[in-house]
Image (cartoon, rainbow, N blue to C red; front, side, top):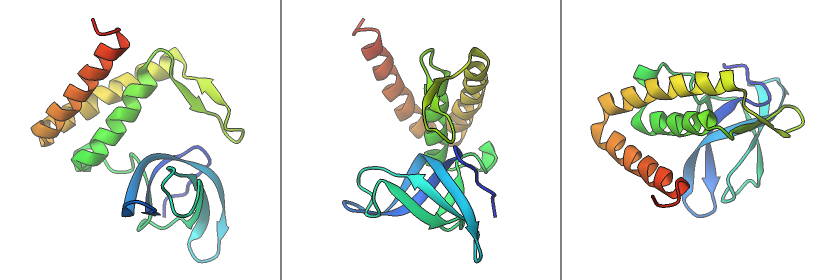
Length: 154
């Protein structure tokens, strides 16, 4: 079992009110506590469509919960690569912020951290391009559209 801590970035299998069983990427662990059966219970912030509400309590079991980058890049599925890539790109942006723990208050990402995120994003980008060129092309088209919007349509 992966020992989780507040602030860990995870994927969560959950019941959606609109889609049935669904997988949410890039969710944050809000709290952890001991659990006699599974070692830990975790509380995770969830999307609006979560049937369990905005904070989901669950056992730390790999059937339902996984650290976002627990697998080596070369073993990640295209969907997981893209989710990690999107998060890393967002964290490399000049105005990026992350919640601090335990308060949850957002704090700016330091220049050094942004640089680390950018370097990791490059590795994820290269892996996505290698393992699924079509997914990479779709991802790049979305990114190019966001950049154009940010630049004011230039």
